[in-house]
Amino acid sequence: MSVDQATVRRIAHLARIKVTDEEVPHLQDELNAILAFVEDLTKVDVTDIEPMTSVMPMPMKKRHDVVNDGGIPDKIVANAPISEDHFFMVPKVVE
Amino acid sequence: MSELTDLTLAAARDALVQKQISAVELAKAHIDAIEKARALNAFIVETPERALAMAQESDTILAKGEPRPLEGLPLGIKDLYCTNGVQTTAGSHMLEGFVPPYESTVSEHLWRDGATMLGKLNMDEFAMGSSNETSYFGPVISPWRRAGDSKPLTPGGSSGGSASAVAAHLCLGATASDTGGSIRQPAAFTGTVGIKPTYGRCSRWGMVAFASSLDQAGPIARTVRDTAILMRSMAGHDPKDTTSVDLPVPDYEAALGRSIKGMKIGIPKEYRLDGMPAEIERLWQDGITWMKAAGAEIVDISLPHTRYALPAYYIVAPAEASSNLARYDGVRYGLRVPGKDIASMYENTRAAGFGKEVRRRIMIGTYVLSAGYYDAYYVRAQKIRTLIKRDFETAFEAGVDAILTPATPSAAFGLGEKSAADPIEMYLNDIFTVTVNMAGLPGIAVPAGLSSEGLPLGLQLIGRAFDEETLFAVAEVIEQSAPKLPQAAKWWV
Image (tube, rainbow over all chains, first blue to last red; front, side, top):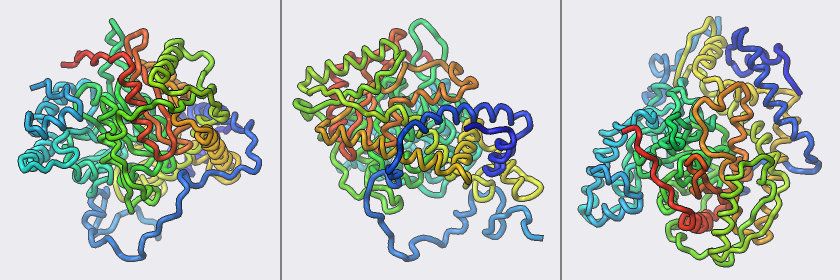
């Protein structure tokens, strides 16, 4: 499979990465090189093979459903580019 | 005082306990070495004050005669481990200035056991790379050079800062991490020892995530014993990572010296590549000879799905990366570039914050997970992973104790030699290491010889799940049998 330029733009939008017009042809070539590289996988017979879902099989551990952390709003927003009164600030999303 | 940096981690530990040296003088020697070696670009952040404060505390504890396992030993920390109060960037512009208010479990274990932090080590951006050239903070330079040549070489990647710093004697050992070979390839390129333990052996909590089902923490150090010592402290169950296993952590150092007589060492025929350099083939044969001389039995084995591991990896790893890196949106931490609305703020931020290779992998991951392609790519790749794991299980069920392979298809290359248009050329560096991540198994890289150009070459051992002890025992046999590598000449001093 290979991607065209419209698909490159669509993927970039899905990934929320802005691409410029000049970047699109390069990205198209690079993505197609990788897709050609993984094309080999279609040769493998995977009939009746289960996909790996757990690297090391083990029963899933569950923690107790209790509050075990919190009360640290200063730390939570400490690295935010913009915050106000312990809220993360974003551009207006609702008119 | 500079000879203190030539001690192995084990020798420094013993000298500290016997009060032949102090933790402060050991820390100072390393701080001094780091200052003189800035040309290597191994550290993103140096933390000399913290190192000295920790060393002073260690000297107090040593004076009381009750040292912890790593008391006073100066280490470097790969910059993808979150360190409380110290900038953690994972080599990315996106996280420049990010100061975690918490500590990763693995680094916390090291401080619990008395180690001293020298600083944060440079790496490929978000651990995506094999040469350290994708770091926003510039490439790390290897202390090694080709004979009669001063061209800068890569220390490998993504743990290039870790490998370079250890090989240049800037720290006694370092943390690293391995998603497709990022501990073992740089170890092989720099004549150091690096182990990727079994998936689940170390907690991933507080490590900047790349591909969660493949990422695993591990150490790089100058000897097998030193990595065994560090591994014991780094490993262990952590309730904060549900994939970390609740198994006792063995005393890995005690496994050293164990006889390998009668062990079966598997040689997988699929690792003999067309066009493999003769010196890599020769190195592999040397390894076989050393195994036989130590009484091990060599058995030819087949791992038929080996050739599919790298392509399957380049679906699984980008898919998981695209999901993990969705968190970098300019809201909670990291870079933010304004936009006319929230969507354009996200897009501008991510275009400016991520480097080229990271953007490329996020896009591949987004594509293979997108509607209509999920089954054809991601599910198929995960099925192939099951087959790769089954190949190894078959070999181990037949009685193989460890598998011997080359660590890399070549010696270290020069900076700029492979970063051209074709990304696949760089990806091929991981051809021998990536199978291990896909199967979740432990693998160790040990120096085993020099290339015709005078550069280190390494062998890899692959073990059964959670049997790192056998790997350490066999790796030590290689270490003792191989010609002793010279130390890289200190051209930067």
